[in-house]
Amino acid sequence: MQDLEIYIRDLEAGAVGRWLESHLEQLVLDDSDTSSVIKGSAHFNKGQLKITLYPQAFGRRYTSLLIEGEHLPWSSDLDCARSAWRAMEAEVRCSPGEWKEGEPAEDEKWWRLDSRGEQLVAWN
Image (cartoon, rainbow, N blue to C red; front, side, top):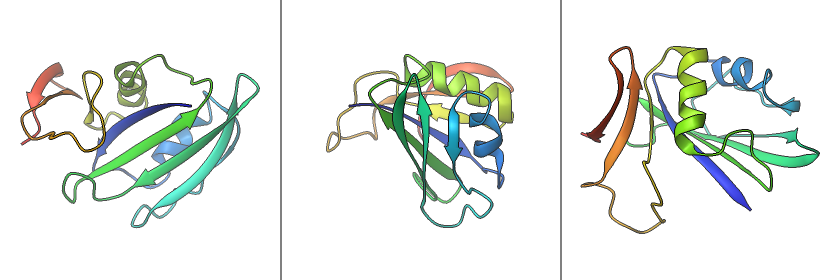
């Protein structure tokens, strides 16, 4: 199983669903209230995807979006973040590489996509 994970700043209700519906089939995701964890599903390339939104990741202003499945609509977190940025015009962040659960993330650089462009930055 593969996954994509991005972090969206100040996520607006319904924004993820509107963005993903143009990339996935049979999307089931009610993101009309983004104050708690949201689980959904979709199909891509004849495979099932699990979609999860985790609010208040890395502080109160970011929501983590996790997409898991055998076949994914983007080849990397950065490609996914670029698509999300174009659709939502909200700041989007993602890991630049192979971060693993349990490794310290504080000193790691992250991609930040916003109106200033794409930059590698420290999270804080």
